[in-house]
Image (cartoon, rainbow, N blue to C red; front, side, top):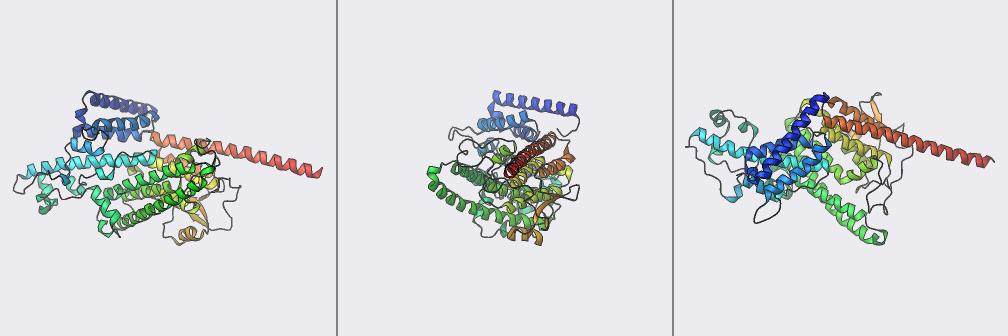
Amino acid sequence: MATPEEEAHLFASGLTELCRTALMDVIRQDATVVSDPDVLQCALLFEFVAVWSGEKWHMEVNISSTAFIFQLTFQSAMYQKPMFLEMILNAGFLDHHQGDAIELDYSEDLASLWTTWRERERKRRLAYSWVALDQETCLFHDAASIISSNDLNTPTPEPEIFWQAATAEEWAEVVPRSKRLNLNHALSLHDYVQRFVEAENASQLLTLSPLEVRLLLHPVHAITRQLRELLRCVSSLGKERKTNRHVSRAVISVQVEQVQSILEKWHGICEAQMQRKGISCAATCANMIMYHLIKLNILVDFVEVERMARGEGPRAGLQSTQPSQKRLYHLEEKEEIYFHCGQVLRFVRFIPEPIRPLWWPAAIYRVALIMWANSTTNADGSSIPKNSNIEDNEEPVAIDSMAPNDPVLALYLQEHVGTPVLTGGTAGIVTFRESENILQHCAGLLRIDCTTCLARGLRQKLLSMAERWESVKAERDYTISNVEGNQKSSRLW
């Protein structure tokens, strides 16, 4: 998929479709094969390629095929509903809470001990790889997760240095004797989530790996999406139910504040990890990107923003209560929205291009539309007058290059002093005076990764949106000038 040559891309797309067809045929013929770790590994690799392929067919089929695999895998006589933990158990993934772990003794043959450990570790890593993929898919496709943190009782993977051991002897050198005597001591993600939520401070979780820190966001994002759905329902209430709408918003506001508190606690953990590992740690930077995107989900209804960017009206139920361009935001903080968008761009730049996650073009596209919408509409849905969103005498605030503790950025957030800009434009900075500049600038950021179909497709969408809205604004300005001219002529007469 990552090739600039059209022929090679078509060939890779065809191979992906062959893999999808073969995988689904195998599962349909014998649903029990999904308990085989090899089959689950193949399914994981296919889903990972398909969801970020940039091909509309593969990306849409990927969501439905994932659900199909889960439905087949999770069916049990007791529950009769899809549960991700059932796949782990059917595949032989051991749950340390069930008390069925095999006792391992150091007196055993070292090679046998290492083989047993590797098989267990492989299943753990495979299980949490599916969780990580589900997390990414739900975040960028605005979909609901079918995994609950209560289901994730499998111990989290061991440190990478253990897994990378090439021989039993090398493994024995890096794994402490105490750990070899009890390889089932590790806590599950469910355990970590409980400790994370209940702890007054997160100091006891500072030793977590970047993967474990990232997966702590999985249940938080699920709650955030539920709150967004509730806000949509409240926003669709008619005028005759205005009192109920205000009460519902007040209740949801309390829940939002609780989620914000949890996210701030998580941010403290990730900040401490970044100070320890350095800003060059790609995994930690990717975690920060996901954090800021989840924060934006609290502030912004991206589904409606995307509809607005396409020139579509609001969805059914919203027409009577909201203007067609009204931002469905819960917190009307333009500065905070710009801040989180800028931080996403900032952390994307920190990750070297060859090792960036495959979803980084989707992150750029997401913040591009949010910044564009934030610069074109007021909180009440009215359009911002031309050239009114930036003052020439205000100090520019480079939201995509300043750290959160930068005094200029802090003053902008707290006192609303300064005007936001992006760095890297032809003039050194990109102002928000013309909102189309935002779309064009972010499209330029995707030019460096035009080897992937996803980046090419999203870049073209941004450029098309910029061109369309530029023509719309030119037509609107022409209409306004004609109206003003006619009014002036009538006054002269």
